[in-house]
Amino acid sequence: MEAKVGDRLVVESRHVGEARKVGEVIEVHGEHGTPPYLVRWSDGHEGLMFPGADAHVEHG
Image (cartoon, rainbow, N blue to C red):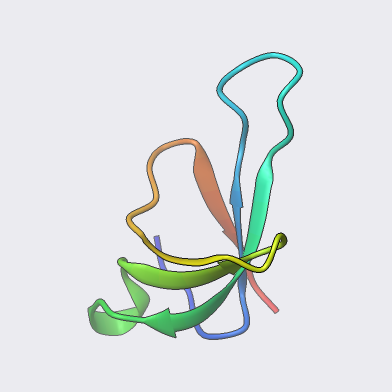
């Protein structure tokens, strides 16, 4: 997975009926755009994220 500042990180729900989480990548801590990422989630919280298989990056 590779991302840059400004990309969106989307984490799909693992349970039926739960919403997916969407956040903006505000810092990239890995080499060449790799995780971990500092993400500002849509609810305003920020956190360091090591995305799993249920996540993808939307560039742009």
